[in-house]
Image (cartoon, rainbow, N blue to C red; front, top):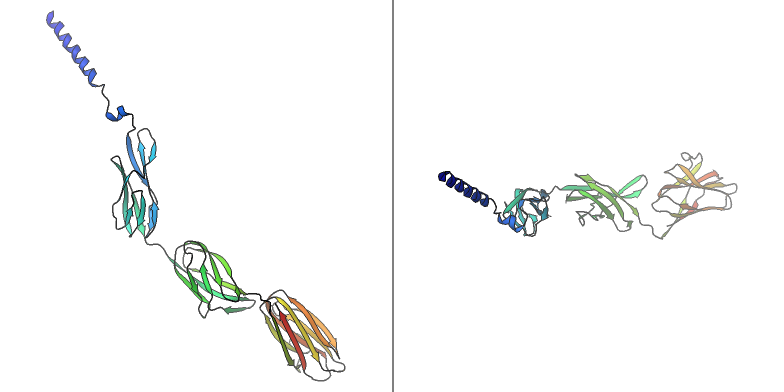
Length: 317
């Protein structure tokens, strides 16, 4: 019976020894700090030459928590001829191609692929003209400028044909301004996603000026078109709004009967009409609210003999 008792004691001691070997813990578990599982790198993965972009590094731990470690991580670029990265994760594109931006933290690394291309550029062009109804006048020497947006400050000057062109533009939306001495500035918004045409028009600046013209006229022997009587038609292009004064005087003609009209070629209507008989003069004052092409018509409803007439026109704007 003694040998059996001795064997039992040995087995019990071995069992106690095996249980004692499972009790120690790893250093990280005893210290209570979470276990680092992975590091991820995030940022804009498609960049253009000379562009900069801030990347971030996030460390993920066993408990599922994430921590921004961009300032503590060790940053590097797989190809510094394409992109470099600062100690805080700021990426600068110095060439074209694809590289990897890496971040290492507590022995764990993560990376993100970055592709660098040359920036796309477009051309914006068009013409600058004067705003006058039914006429197009090219304006040379006008300044066309980009006011805001990624291309702010770029400009061009129109040539003799009123044309301009601005090249090497990044895509986007911005305001364009055209300016020229003696004209009001004009501003338009344009969106450029390819080569784009933008035509601009300028209005003459309204100035307080007075122009007076005095001339001798004679009535024709044939009726004027659309009037049905002997008349004299004077073309008057008015580029600005204002007031038009007209006065017709003539020698004493017994039985004469004249009519003075202001006619709009743009609308085909008579705006002002006054009649008079000898000895007298005809005059009117009319407000011009729309720039355009006008006619002054002197119509002979009844004239006994041909005689010169004096027509005086004054335009104040």
